Image 1: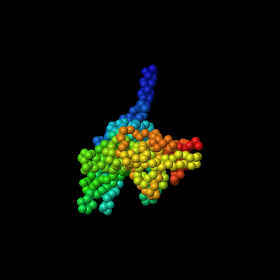
Image 2: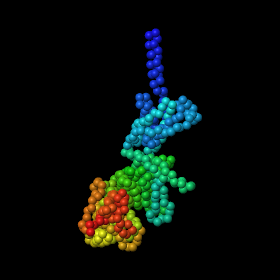
Image 3: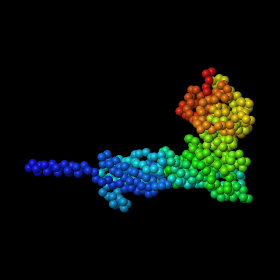
Image 4: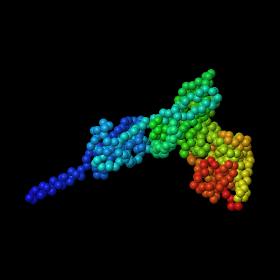
Amino acid sequence: MKQNAKNIMMLMLFTGLALMARAAVDVDIVATNGTVTASVSASNNICTLTVKPDNDYYITRYDIVVSKLADASHAATRASGNGPGISNTLTLEGEDPSDLGQERTYTFQLQGDEYSYKVEATFRKKKIETNDVQTNATNGSGSATPQASLELSVSQDNNVQQKEVTVVDETTGEETTKTVNVVEVKLDNLSIPETTTGGGTPQEVAVTIPATITSSDGTTEYAIKEIGAGVLSNISSSVTITEISLPATDDPLKIANDAFKMDDLPPGDSNHKVLTIKSPLELLDDYTLNGCLKENVESGKLKATVTPPNHYWTFSCGVDVIVPDGITVYTCRMESNSQVEIIPIDDSALLVNGVRVIKANNGVLIACTDNSDNNAYDIVAATTNEATGNRPATGDAKSYGAQNMLEPVIERKNYNSDEYFVLKDNEFHSIMNNSSKVPACKAVLKKSNL
């Protein structure tokens, strides 16, 4: 009897162990242009996915969908398309590497023996081609503007994000919101095909580089963060690019020193060409100082274009800029709590090498003295600026006297409503909300103690 009891006890123990052992987990993987392997840890119910893109492809954690399926016993019928449907999607844990072409691992939590799983991985090409770029003829030839194309590549130093975008149905006009992946890319090449304007004259074209490109399936937004060397090497000889406009971005693009090289002639050669670059006003000082567009600055061909909404407007910049024609520059001071005196700055205080210049880090008031409100004015970086490789300074230089109570806004920032006025519709008003940021390249008026 003792032996029999012992045998029964051993049987119970082994039966218990059998009940605790986990059934094999069914993970169905769907992937092309890369490999995904699954490894299950029974101790903590974690499935680890090892993901490796093929050459010339990349993937992010947002391109992988893990679905929990209803019944693990129906694997064969599910694979044939006749099995139980997908129950829900699971959260994938893990960080993307900065180089999205590298191997990495992600994990997800297993849900129970009654479930199986499907992993769908969408590997995407590192090289992206698009015609989503604006070109405009600038020589008035009247012929059709040739269509430019861009070649982009996924940056090796990436910081993938997601954001919400609004999509408008072209038929109904209905707006919906969806989430897209934001992947950083480098502009490698700008191409414009052969074209004619009649008489064999090269067509002059201005090109606007977009800030972002949307993938054909609408799931990914490619954000241009870099411009590589020699991007103009595939421009047809029948086309002359006269101007390139850089996109409005939160931070300046990383631009190779010879990105916009027009020819192989030395700078002193009379036939050497330098391209005009148009920057967003808020980034004009960054592009001037970081040295990537040094030759354009020295040639007076780095500019921003401003269309003031009113006769008077405030201005500041982190570098010296040339005063456009038809503009008068003023300082301001408080005469009382309700009156502001505007004082024109004499040309003698503005002239630098015979050119009127607003010096860096000064808040000024500008008036369109030609009475041409809503006209566009070119703000050109002065050739006297030197590349420092640094971000612009943000302090107040007070180059036009300590009595000038306008302070420069070099970077977008908050100002205390109790201490500052802003200009709106040709009048100074108190800042209404302390949480509202004043845009860069404006100026704020410091309230006096009168």
